[in-house]
Image 1 (cartoon, rainbow, N blue to C red):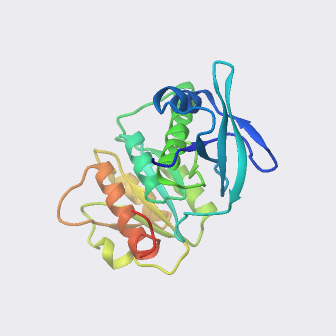
Image 2 (tube, rainbow, N blue to C red):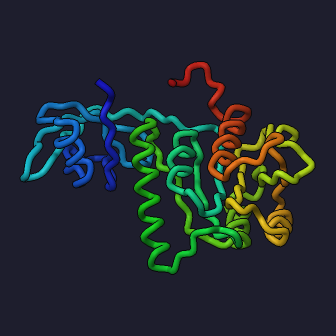
Image 3 (cartoon, rainbow, N blue to C red):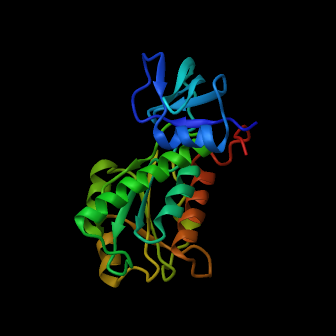
Length: 251
């Protein structure tokens, strides 16, 4: 049976037992039909994981006993930040988590289809955090990628440079003269990948990104959809500079 991994939104260190969150409890007991005695793996998103055993499963709550702790990490040596124009964001967040990005910066672009007021943006960001946590449950990561607040392009680039001033910075643009392969191999420990919306970046946005040190590159002869471009470029960067070429890595 496939290992059942559950994210717990509270620090697990020093605890002997824990109550499972409602959604995880319902999935474990109603969908997977797990009962008392079933083995689990619990993690809190800050590194490491706990072997655990379900001790209570019913209307009065679902609890698990924490047992052996393992400090196992499955993070890429490349600290990759995805700066993604808001679009089909759920799917991109899920798959980029599986591919090992360290942080995700949602970007409000001039041609983004999505327009959110402050209240709706807050709800969307809480939803996205749930997507990241679920993706970590599935792929085995014990650290949840950092989800940064949604920002306009200039502010997003400024924040990226403040956080990682020496990082390699790349933006995809099908009109660029340089190919991704010409700049993407790096000895730097961090990188930023800027991906535009379906309508592409405006000329003003391209100029803004260049002012922040982003190098425009093309990725092959075809124009890719935003979600395809993001994941293909992440996989390429991770294969060259991260851990996707690790012969000991799992499938």
